[in-house]
Length: 221
Image (cartoon, rainbow, N blue to C red; front, side, top):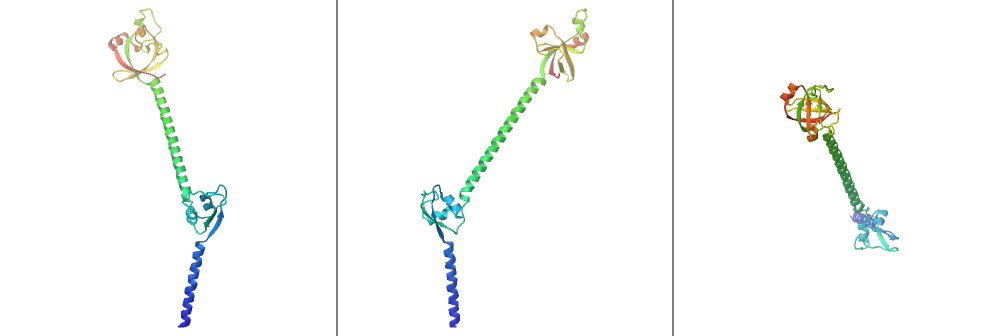
């Protein structure tokens, strides 16, 4: 029984020594001399450890504690650098800044695009939008008093030439809903007092029936 007891005790002591050996290795440290410009973060990164481990090993107040050139520090060698403590906030900040910049850029682009579309719509409405006007009718031959005229009946329209110069093509929508295209080829004294009036060419009998109407007009050429 005695040999077995001695053997068992030897194994126990050997295991204890091995455990102590590993404990000593995991808690081992090396000395580092601080250089000008060093920070705890740089030292930890260069030595594959963490700022917390250095703080604890040297009884410093915090990771932002002041360290001086030629100061001796104990550097634990068993812990990995706590890279996330500084890198993560910078990454998040950079990501947020990038997201904010992209959102701002997208917003500005969208605003500029909407503004451009609005201007295009305004221009389109100004040049081709419908305008409400008053319409009367006349027969160019009758208006000429039997002296003859080169203006054909039933094809054109008389208008204020400072608004619609001769040759302007108009689309006219009447009260009954039908539309027709007319070309400005005449004017009259009525335009001086009412530039919002058109005098539409047609036969005298048609003009008598037409009377005075409200119409919609837009320029098409």
